[in-house]
Length: 327
Image (cartoon, rainbow, N blue to C red; front, side, top):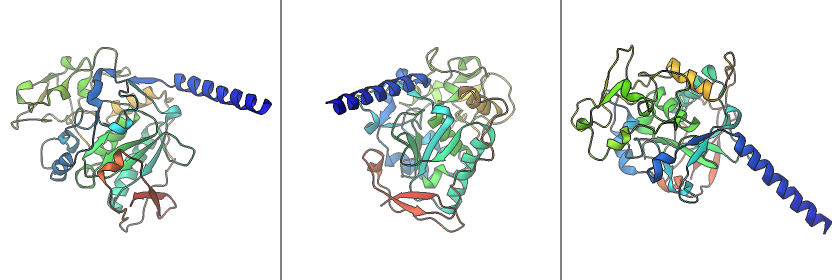
């Protein structure tokens, strides 16, 4: 009897600690998106992304039929039907695994993108272990470039299709910024002071990708509108006729929709969101993701792996990090 009481007390204490911990993690309100957050990975999107090249206007993640092009919560994550909040990653630590069929060049690009976070922010991407319940799974299914927003609990996918999503480092950084808790720059509530959305040039059924966030649901963390954010659409995003869909109302230096890497204000926003000190970055921390020059074959990945549990088979990489593959 004493043992049973002790077990019940321990269980209650753990539950209280879990609630206390969860409430201490700052939340990200996504309720204004409603059921549009949820969907299934699409091979039609993958086919469009596969034919994308750098000579085209726009970015590969703007070819998606998902929310705002590349925001997707696979229906298996819906739990009770609708997530209204996600959260930031505790202490800025983001456990991750790499799953899929990336070759050595693509793995090198992933490593450079992750190290760009470490060099400029206090976020730390760490290879997941058995103690990590919440983590991102970087996958390569033929369903385009997409991610959920913030920490949603359990395994959450950041998908980077091999053909199309791994051409520039900025696309990788963009999707990882979604996973760390950011939405698109041009949807900030004050955006109409800075850009004009040309509705007449937007593809039918895609106008809602340009909806402004309701007041109070997003934060620029003290930064002004950033035309050159890696989270900004290109000026021809979702164009139906080859004409611009976004035009600037103000002069700015740089390229709208650039995918070369972080802008200065991207870095500032991340560091303010995660309360990094002005002198603290994760520079010098190197996750074990580098590979040798030979190609890493990861097997065949099925689209259903985004929705149902998968069986992972580890593959040893050149520096000891175990790349996981779906077989």
